[in-house]
Length: 342
Ligand code: 1HN
Image 1 (spheres, helix red, strand yellow):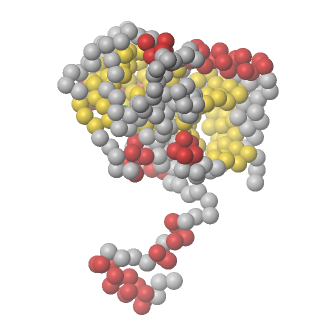
Image 2 (image 1 turned 90 degrees about the vertical axis):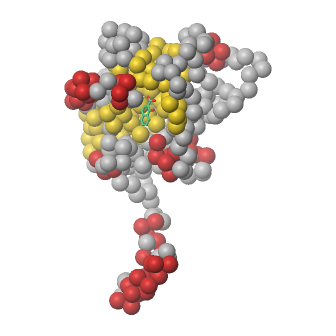
Image 3 (image 1 turned 45 degrees about the vertical axis):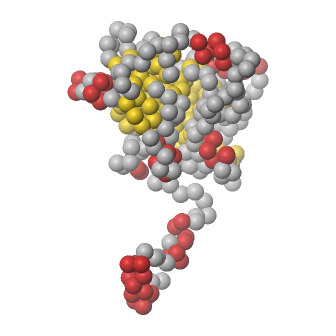
């Protein structure tokens, strides 16, 4: 209790930039994870009209990136979906270009709508299709362009808050809006995405050299797995995207996952310390996060905060993509999970 005498003491020491730990200790070192992040769902059919209106208000060029931030209702004004990770929906209209730049933040793109617009990284383009998982590694030049006839929308996931916490943000604009294409499309896939690697190649960075993890191949793997074995009671058939050069996660700061939930399947209650962003890719179902129930269908996005119990129920064969800061927590020895009720 802060008696008058103690309060006077706190006021005396404040000008010396001192404060009593004992007034704050309980809030700093909690028995279990606490977060202002709350469970939330964004229905794509509700968000899409707003995104298209943004398309009429500002060009991709003027905006640099025409992105609507999925702002966690518990973290208002902080441009973030969890304490550590960013999520936003980016729109590129036919004929538009999002100019080349680079930054130390890493980005993932998970394709939501449209066929064949490209993103370019370090001189190579990849044409994006729904369900593809595409990586923009830290400090690589990247621009996006849409030479198709339809709008293109993807989910951007970035490690913004992690880089901010560490005060390690650098960014710059490229001299040219569209970077020169120096390698044919599919070049990095040929080198790194067939369980093969150039014989003398050594990784220089921690991010996967695979640029695009196409949905067609991921889906085929899930299909085969679901035919060949029983689903895990807490995850269904769940896989993580991997960096073939290291066996580690595809990105150093963001773990990415894909799971197949067979029709009628319900997962048991599960929680882990990595707050997680989910994207429904196929099928429909319901997920419970803490005391909230979210009914989802393809393209809907929802978030589960750290250490909050999650269950999923698939109404028909369903696929969920997800991402979290799990690689960071694992490297720091912090990650924990709990299967089933305590
Ligand atoms: C960014 O650079 C991109 O390059 C997308 O496409 C989303 C969100 C916050 C900060 C930078 C992009 C972003 C971003």
